[in-house]
Length: 323
Image 1 (spheres, rainbow, N blue to C red):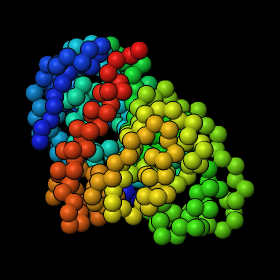
Image 2: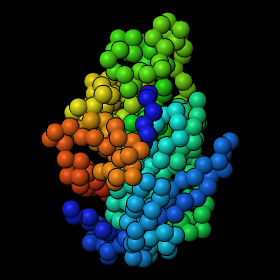
Image 3: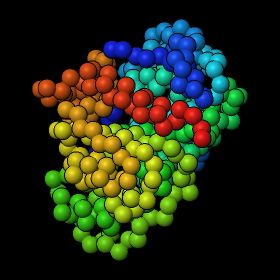
């Protein structure tokens, strides 16, 4: 895939065993360094009772409390997040609004800053797994995170990572054939061999980093590398978003994934592929203008307000209480 250069907030506390109205909480954030072949940082967003302030991180400005204590209220469900940009380093902060919203809703969110890799289909699921383990081992979170209630969300290539973490197998021969037949799907097929050089490449085995996920949220997922029959074996509730004017062909990616997954809900919103990136502040817009431009009729702020609430409602229903 091509590189991604990239209001009502219902603030609730711990979702442990009941659905009663919890006390108001805010979003806390911290970063941890995760040891791997290439060490990387992971953002952890979490519920806190400390007041939020304006936090600057590069071209991004967040409203959160940095390194504050985790809110009381039992154990919180966990949401993993994988950002887009499959080849180069990227940042989950382009979807920081969603991550902080989930923290205010009573979820602990773990989001790696994926480093550059030529083996992203293998490396990124491992990085997500290691980031989860680092959070669960951290004394600040070990008594607050519920390892039995884990969901995962991903944008673009991060949607593929989410599917791999749920048990999907990557099929490069299928991807090559798809790109041969659909050269118009430039975002999915940039750099993909379309001759017969991949024709006999067997599907990759299931990842060693498959996780016991109980819910999936896929924002414009990169779905072309996955065989529908393989996706049909992922018996996990999934909320799948696509954009009506995307250049990541819906029929070969988001809609194909939604059709193949046995327990999916499909939503299409106005806008381009980047409508799922936060509304852009001037600093980020100057760095990544393509990610910040919306076509007529696509109100990104309103779309995000709606989508954030839909996602938190979906995750709350699937992760609200351990059986």
